[in-house]
Length: 339
Image (cartoon, rainbow, N blue to C red; front, side, top):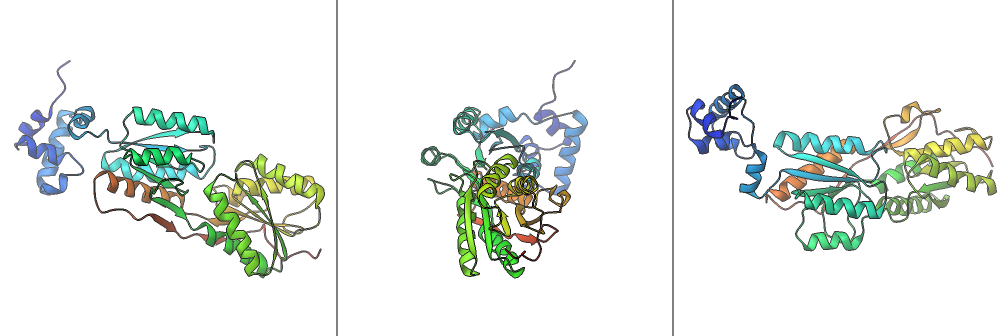
């Protein structure tokens, strides 16, 4: 087997200078070369079977062209679209994505942070919601590039890309108010999550603005089981005291469905239910779930764009990008039952 072709071989085959071949094959510098030359060099590289030596390039540029992505739970359907958005933006630009899953465990999260740093990733995109404030502050002080996605930073002025959670909750409460609901329940996620706090505060404000009675119950996780457990405890003591539930996400809403059935209640005849995120299966619920649609794929794209700008030293990124959300009305909400 012969030796692997080198960039020198590509330059000779294309009839260009070595530096020209290098710029033509580099996504970040190819615009400096005429399209005809880029096409000629690329063809020569393909014909020779040349592949870029990213290790050697990393030694020259002091970059690994890898981005670490930290998510709390890959089984939660909102995170795959975010990761796809990140990869769709970074991949064509020559960057690889390393995804780690923390299972919502702070110790696992710290270990993954350290592992990614040892791998010398060029930056981090962080989706986990309860990152230790001291950890984030320390990494920011060390000059580590990071962007938060679907969550806001705590303890460090990192950029963030989020959906407009407060607006989404207000849309849900307003929808129930228009249907005549007076007494609502909000199931929120873990207290340490910035998302949980934002949505709970928005629920309280929306109930006040619409003249409704609102009660908030904290759940241990954004999961089906946590939603059912919290709703079970509430209904065991307050069976006929509310007509509407605004859940912190669609998984919690599905847990509410299970609990209502276990207590002999029907949705939406007895209790209307609204979720948040419009997960891929929300329309398959029985009944189909009214929910807030958040643009998770676009969140990933925007987070990737920001971190690449940060790495390549382009114009400073905004502190926070807030993407609009919309209310998707389906069969889980109806006119309030009289209680």
